[in-house]
Amino acid sequence: MTRDPAHMTQKTLQPRPLTLSTFELPEGVTSRPWDYLPATAPEHARDLARREIEALAKTDGTVALCAGKACASLTPLPWDSGIFGLPMARIGGVYLSPGNAGLHESRALFSALLTAASDAGIQHIDLPLRVTDIAAIEAATALGFRVVACNLGMDWEVRRARTPPPASAVRVRCAREDEVAALGDLAAASIDTLSRFAADAYLPPQKVPDLFRAWAMNSLRGRADRVQFAELDGKLAGYCTWRLQPDYEAVTGAKLASLELTAVHPDARRHGVLMALVHDGLTWLEGRGVQLAEVFTHALNGGMQRGCSRMGAVTRTARYSLHWSADQASRR
Ligand SMILES: CC(C)(COP(=O)(O)OP(=O)(O)OC[C@H]1O[C@@H](n2cnc3c(N)ncnc32)[C@H](O)[C@@H]1OP(=O)(O)O)[C@@H](O)C(=O)NCCC(=O)NCCS
Image 1 (cartoon, rainbow, N blue to C red):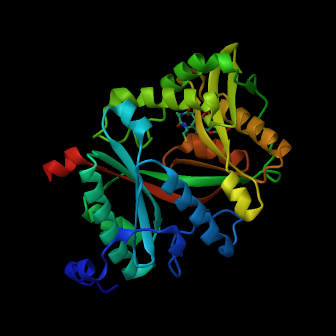
Image 2 (cartoon, rainbow, N blue to C red; image 1 turned 90 degrees about the vertical axis):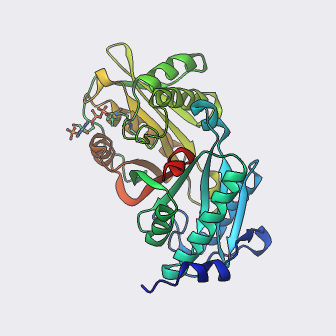
């Protein structure tokens, strides 16, 4: 690939505010939304992207920019910011042209968003990118973003995936509204040590359990469509949370759910708790007419991959989490 000098990029690509009325996906865009799922057809890409951008535009404080047909936006994360005690944001809605053009677009867009972040006092930014978005990864790392995690996207075709779990003493049930505190304690005690939060040396490690505690509690307070507990020997042993994705159904006609949080208490691992939770969740989804379910897990999370694939999941995508922090940038 021939690289143009950076100064030419600056001249030719001046990011400007994105307007939805003129939004178009770049020709041949490398990452079309949910394109790895079996129910997603190429013609769904524009509407799925449009819905993502519309949702971002409605979120307070979002800066959405375009450069040519490419776009990306920066959205403050008030909830994460409160837990970690520093202003945090995420770059999302990233749609770029393939190849060299995508490199130029991502350089222009990411550096303009870093300027917007600095103006807003943002000190930490999360940027998820597909592992195949080579040009965007190159541009982001040159601007000081660091790869902190690599996650695989696994999915189930729900009806086909109904593999029974191995016989075990695990009992799965729905969490009750009055169990919010117990769920929070379980989540804080069972964290994923490979997560992008735990892996980032620029985030205070003592706050990571608080993040999972609050996330799980919010899930039971309404963020999730279903929260399940697993019990083993009369004790809470694991939990998981499922969210339906109405935007996906509105565009493709197929129902999709995400397995958002899953964890098993360290004392209860390797007793089939994960498999029992997933099986119960898939049974519930099938009863609701849901065709597809997906989960993202770290590339090194062997237990999660083994348990989910034994319950019928297939790996279809992978993405990096890149983080930028003002602390680190000031030391460069
Ligand atoms: C990943 C996790 C959920 C697995 O839960 P679990 O209840 O121990 O899993 P199960 O007992 O149902 O085991 C599922 C399969 O994976 C295997 N497995 C479990 N842990 C494993 C590990 N650490 N390495 C390799 N294989 C493992 C089991 O042997 C079983 O396969 P098998 O029956 O063919 O032998 C649990 O380790 C955990 O909570 N980790 C921390 C939080 C986390 O990572 N959550 C997932 C975030 S996406």
